[in-house]
Length: 296
Image (tube, rainbow, N blue to C red; front, side, top):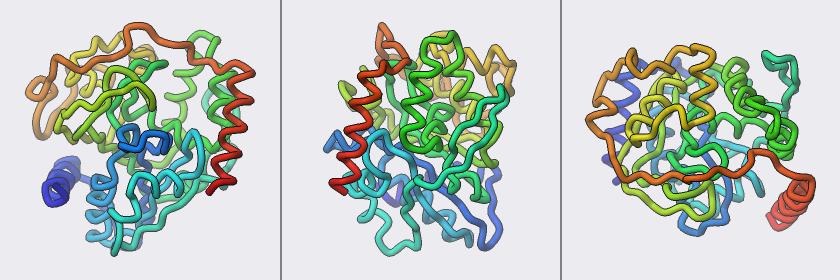
């Protein structure tokens, strides 16, 4: 499998025209939501992260990998998911998103974004393709929410969850303040049925998909999964704004098209839970995050 991933990653990145200069600071941002599932299904697979790291190291870049999980630290989740073993022998720094910088979004609100994400030369977004009980499906645009540091994520859920389209608007606004990058989505074994952590089941899509434009990648993946795009609140917000990549009819596919790899059995939740986090959930989450950090 590692050799196949190396080949697939190389072919994808080459087809997308991705290049880096010697010494460039590349940050890999996988989905490291939680170590709660021992099978690691909720997180980006460590072998894919290692394959991407190898490609950039071979091209002279300096590589780090990090995230801001829902519970615990990135290093704790990486350890639980087998990241240290997968990158053994590679010059890859594993970092926690703990240092942040206040950034003003397009609507004027200020959000604490990880300095590691803001200060890199290339941000490599590595989402896990999975069903999501609140936003239907978690893909490339949603994965950037992990650049918001720590408790600020549940706070934004609570602040915007009951305010029309404010939550998904905030997710899309993050694209405007983060560095240039590329997204490679882990669909080798996706999660369907439910998610983002509990209740999901493995679905062997056997897919690795990539794009420089995360909106276009989401649009293409909704096609692959045979999901009506209008069911995705994140896609609806991108389409409402007329963002490049939100029109499936003008997407250019350098390799296989969405139709060529479409599946018909990827299950998503029939009913969605509220995006908002109530006060008691915020408090419980704060205790869980504190306990996870103390254990680590």
